[in-house]
Amino acid sequence: MKLIIANWKMNGSIELVKQFSTQKFPENVIFCVPDIYLSFVNNLTLGAQNVSSIPHQYGAYTGEISAKMLKDIGVKYALVGHSERREYFQENNTILKQKIDNLVAQDITPIFCFGEKLEEYQSNQTLSVIENQLEPVVGVKNIILAYEPVWSIGTGIVPKKEDISKVYEFLQKKFAQMPKMVYGGSVNSDNSHEILSTWPVDGVLVGGASLKPDEFQKIIDFAS
Ligand code: PGA
Image 1 (cartoon, helix red, strand yellow):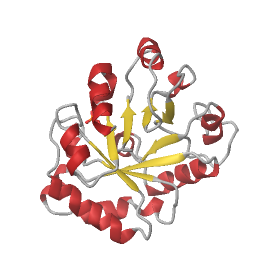
Image 2 (cartoon, rainbow, N blue to C red):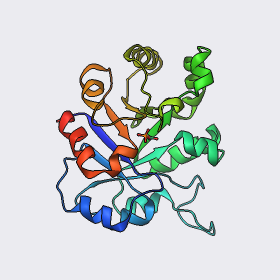
Image 3 (cartoon, helix red, strand yellow):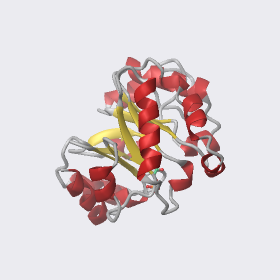
Image 4 (cartoon, rainbow, N blue to C red):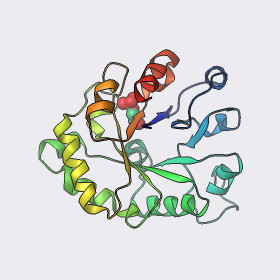
């Protein structure tokens, strides 16, 4: 079954969490809601949007949430390397590697996001950019890769199938055992059927459309 991953970002409300919690979703639907709502979620497969890079489970690190704490409340997945965190929080490969190590130690599956910016795409640098971005996951066994070209996030623009195939083939060569790869960027109920049925992907990572229950349900229906 294809994975459907909701990334609420810094959006949503306790009402929305409760609304989703009243429904029963299959396990392939993963809800990455803001940490503060995680413990209010019932019935749903939980993903975090972030985890501390500090290499300790506890300690004097004000404002941080460790992988161990995520594990305690039943989190099974966590986003790492999202372009918004790379850009607004200066998360580099060293920090991302530490986050992955912390998650792996708690048996939480990292959903590792990567993707090039528009100017990099236009100058044909996609593969060299993602090659560098993938450094923190080399050798990590239990991981989901999320290809999210920065120019498609929140813009309504999705890549061509050929673009995805190029990335997929590159990853196939890079990883002895190809991890699951999902696509993210402006996925909605109009384009998800084509993406899920014709692109070489194991699922989708959905931002804006995951906050609208009816819209999100349609995307889930295409995957089942
Ligand atoms: P979007 O966001 O679906 O709103 O484009 C996707 C993401 O950033 O994960």
